[in-house]
Structure formats: C-alpha cells, structure tokens
Amino acid sequence: MLAIIGGSGLNQFPELEIVSEKKITTPYGDCSAPLTIAKLKDRHLVFLPRHGHGHKLPPHQINYRANIWALKEIGVTRVLAVNAVGGIDSGMEPGMFVVPHQIIDYTYGREQSYNFLTDGYINHIDFTHPYSQSMRQQLIASLLAANLPFQKQGVYACTQGPRLETAAEVLRLQRDGCDLVGMTAMPEAALARELGLEYAALCLVVNWAAGLAGDELSIDEIMQTLAAGMADIKKTIFIFANQ
Ligand code: HPA
Image (tube, rainbow, N blue to C red):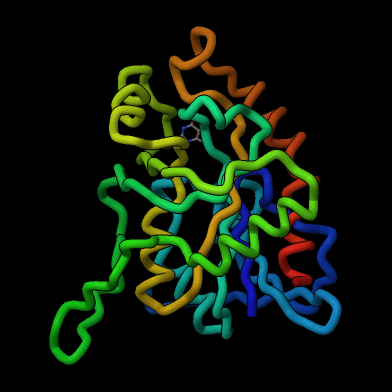
C-alpha cells in the first residue's frame, strides 16, 4: 500500500475518496494527524499531513518516528513524500518540480533512529541511495505524463528550521553541492529505510534560497507559489498512484 506524506500546502486532500480515518498511537507517541485511508480505483492509499491538520507542527517538532511507525503498522510499503523547497542550483527556479536523488542532513536534535538492535548489534542501515530508485523512476514518468517542468535529480539539503537560512548558509550549502533546501526530508527518509519502507520525494521549488535573488525572502510570495503548485502536485500524485 502507498502512503502520501503531505508537506506544506498539502495538509488536506479533499479530492480523495475517504474510506476511514485511523488515529494510531505508537510506542513513540502520536503521529501528526489521524491516518486517512482513501480509495483510488480498486486500491487503497494512506494520506498523512506531516504538519498536522491546520499546519500546527513546525519541521523540528514533527514526530517523524511516530509517523513512519504508524504507516508501517497499517501496512504501508511505499511512501511518497511531498516537500516544499528553496532552489539553490540555477536550474531549480520557483515553480520547478524536483525528484531528489541525494540528501545532506544539517538537522540536529531530532529523534533520528528507532535504535534497533539486529542480532545484538546496532542496525546500521545502508543509506548510500536515500531514495528508492524505482519510485524515483515512477515519479519521473508521472511528471512527464503530467507535462510539468521538473529536474530528475538533485541534492536535498535538510536544514533545521523553522527559520529560513542566512545568505552565507546558502552559499555554504552551494559549496557542499546542494541543489535544493528544505526542512523535512530528515530523519523521515532514514526512518523509512530503518523500517524497510520504500521512500521517494516529490519536491516543489517555492522560492530561490536566501540571498540568491533579491534582498529578503517574501513569505507571501512563497505561499503564493506553493498554492499555485498544489493542483499540479495532486495531479502528479494521482498519475503516480494509478500506475
Ligand atoms: N529553505 C528551507 N526550507 C524551505 C525553503 C527554503 O528556502 N523554502 C521552502 N522550504
């Protein structure tokens, strides 16, 4: 079963045919919202708004462990994450979609592991390729079918937030080889790997990262670009889920 983790702007998904809502409590606490089970043709999918209904949870306060645990518990095997991001590379202009292939984690103080022991040893997952290659290919095919502008790869810098970056921080991310910057890919992607879930991300660039265009960032403009991209995100999700 496929799960969609909605990011900023995708807190509700009224276009889904809802079957039920399940509030799941996990050993790690509550997830961001009850899981919405929806029907798509003859299949079910699960929708979970990462920031909760009404966007109550900032990126550093999301219970990523509970979210991924709950999805696993309900029978999810594949997770499609949606993230709003800032563009760093010149090809990542606002309005562009990106299917990232790599992550650099700049977060701190987040619960980032289930701390499993496997045969008495710490479970050091392989994370060479943080995103599922097959889901990425499927996403690329979906974006092509939806006729949307996209970059088929990119290095995602995950910052702590909730503030946006300084101009110097963005230059550092650029020197590090990052193409886009967001606040929510980690530890979500790693936790999914720990539980054996396939995981990929559909990112929408909603602004140039700090200092790369104009003087300061306008939150209003970010919100407008986000809202403008929502219909295309849903269209891509429907194509993806029906494949
Ligand atoms: N930085 C971090 N996270 C973001 C940004 C950004 O510029 N835009 C949207 N999410």
